[in-house]
Image (cartoon, rainbow, N blue to C red):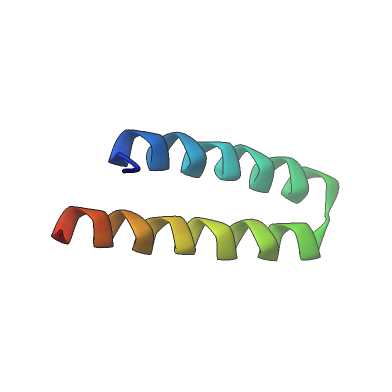
Length: 50
């Protein structure tokens, strides 16, 4: 079972990657990070419900 703490760690990793991509102006990578973050957030919401 994935805990919310694990998901939070993965989300913050993605946020760091997003900021890095933003600084370097890599739009596709930014979009990929945003998608990953939203997927992780919905995963977190689902794990909270069960």
